[in-house]
Amino acid sequence: MKAISYRGYGGPDVLEYGEVRDPKVGPDSVLVKVRAAAVNPVDWKCREGHLDGLIDPVFPVIPGWDVSGVVVQPGASVPEYEVGDEVIGYVREDFLSRGTFAEYVAAPVRTLARKPRNLTFAEAAGLPLAGLTAHQVVGDALRVTEGDVVLVHAAAGGVGSIAVQLARHAGARVIGTASERNHDFLRELGAEPVTYGDGLVDRVRALAPDGVDAAFDTVGGATLKASAELLAPGGRLASIADGGVVDLGGVYCFVRPDAADLGHLTELVEQDVVTVHVDRTFPLERAAEAHRLSEEGRTRGKIVVTVDWGD
Image (cartoon, rainbow, N blue to C red; front, side):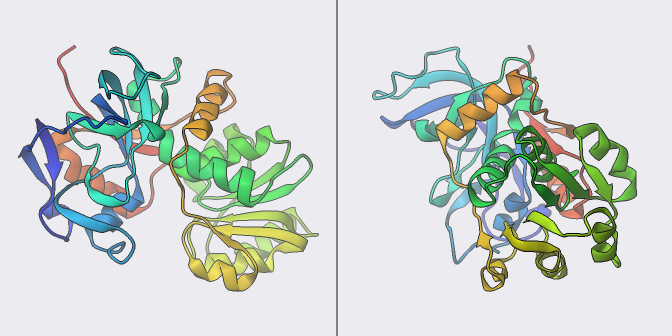
């Protein structure tokens, strides 16, 4: 099959497009014909070796953890899916090797859920990792509930935009940081936008003089410290970007595959509670360009790589 792969750590130039070995389908796996795979910051961080102490690579590595596609072969112990079913998945294993930037992926069944019927394959590919991250932070780590004032950083990005929608669905008031060009987008999602950068604390305090009940950090560093400073008494803090959140009394979150959570997200999408915004798409062979764009960190919503099957 055709795929993107890399034989060692490095920049986008290490990504190669070409033939690789077809995946084998284990008893608990599902062979998925890939229609689209989303790009996430963790993809290029893995490619550059930043997660080397956490996840071992087995080179050559096919990058990508997000996928949408069609089942072509269920494993021997997988009665949940049949040939032709449309699925999405956060296909993360405990090592780097068998990713989703390929024509086919053998996905563990624990990583899959039914594709939302009202999304295109490109849109659906942007849901798993970002949606699960937002779901697990907003619902589990921060326990957002009705009446809360919630601060979401990088609120126009893939994770942030879904976090805004989930917090609003829970009945919270949401303040979201973003560049000025994304302020109207945040208003459409139901958030009150503020510009990030110098003076952020004062701008948020102008909107929430008593502080925020929960803060979701996706940036780390100075942004995390500002978030802690903005908490109301008893406020909750979570970060997906900076382990130093623990020293501030918060929770560090690393998203996990969860079929039930992913199924719940599918339901919310089909109920028009959650939408997925796709900023740009690239054909599979141009995945290096997609990685470069992701590294710039200015994406609204998701960047997606598509596989052209000629249909």
